[in-house]
Length: 139
Image (cartoon, rainbow, N blue to C red; front, side, top):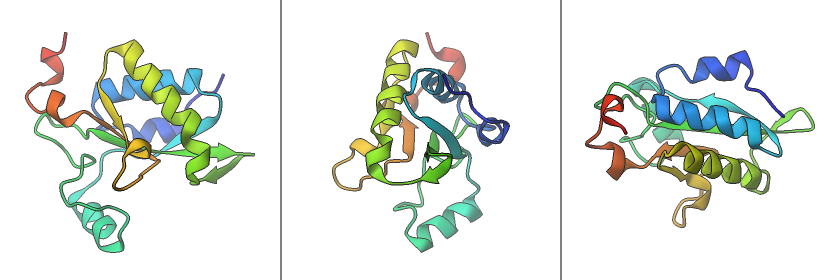
């Protein structure tokens, strides 16, 4: 069983509690080790990510949303103790995140499952579900 490093835990500051719950559960059940590379992103950082092609939008879910939280995280996989960004290594992380989300009753989207732009490290809360809800209204 793997655990999040302190650095990864710090990267979760400002992220929606439901998504944090999913990440923390996923690391417990994942077949590979992973960490958090980014959660809450500043507007300045988003501009840089967009200009460099790292992000495809200026309306990123990493930015602070109406409820005050980031609704996205980017994860990385550790292969033999080294960070790896290859899509093939994310299948177990995607599986663990989706399983943890189902167990927790949290609706997420995995960028590694998108058709138009595969973004394996990216996970976000389902926009349509969370748009009108604040954390205090969740059941």
